[in-house]
Length: 366
Image (tube, rainbow, N blue to C red):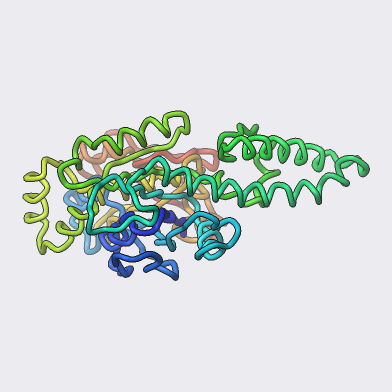
C-alpha cells in the first residue's frame, strides 16, 4: 500500500538529518534554508518483533518486512500560502501525502541558525498551522462559491449538505483551527473526499531535542505538549543528532550498546517509524512458512477479501475463505500443524474484519 507520511517543518529544524537516518535515500543536510528543494522519498522498513519471532519458528528462506513511505518536503516560511519562498511547491507536495510528521526544533545551538532568529517551537508550529489553514480557507471559499448556487436554487440535497459542511469548515479555519477539529458524521465523509484539505491530515509532532533531553524532554518540548493537548495529535521526542551518530555504527550490537549508554530502550527512528505507521491507521497481517515469512500492510477495518487483495488482486476477486491463526496461538504452539491439531485455526468468510497480527492463508478461485 503506497501510503506516505510527509516530513514538514521550518528550514533548519532537523528534517533532512532525520530523513537521512530513516532512509537510505539521502537528503542534503546543510546549515542553510531550502537545502531540500525536491521532495525526497524513502521507503522505510517497519520494525516488527513479531515477524522476527515467526522467522525463528519457521526458518524460512526469505523474511520480508512491511514498509511505509516517508517524504522529505522543502522547508516552509511565512507567506507560503501566498507563494512566498517555496510555498506553492511545499503545499502541493504535502497535499499528496496521507499524514504529516511535523518536526519542531527543541534545542539550542548557536552554530545552527534559525530562520526566525530564535528557538520557539510553539511559534514555529503556529506558523505552519497558519499557512496550511490559510490555504485550506482559500480552497473552502472557492468551493462555497461553486456550490452555493446549486444548493440555493437547484434543490440539490447533496449540494445543500456540502454547503453546510463547507460553512462549518470556514468558521473553524477563520478561528485559527484546523479542519480536522470539525467533527463529521459517516454520511458527511464522502462529501469532503475530493476537497483534499491540508489540515484534515493526521499529525505526529516530533520534538527534535538535544542528546541530554532524549529521554525526558526539556522546557521546549513541554511547551509543545501543552500547545497540542486539545488537538488529539501524537508527540514523540527524537534527538536527530544522536540518531545520526547511531546510523553511522556498523552492527546491531554496537547500536544497542550506544542506546543503552544514552538511557534509551530503542532508537528514536524506530519509535518514529512505528508512530508513523500507526498515524496512517495501518496494521499488519502475516503469511509464514518454509518459503517465506512476510508482513503485509492493511488499513484498520479492512475485511478478509480486501486483505487478500493486498497480496494479489486475483486473491480478492476469487476469494473463497481465509484461514486465520492468532499470532499468540502460533507462537505458543510452534507450528501450523500444532495449531490445527489444537483447533485454533479459524475459517473466516467475506465479512471477517482482519485484526492486527493475524496470520492468514487465503483460499481463492479465479
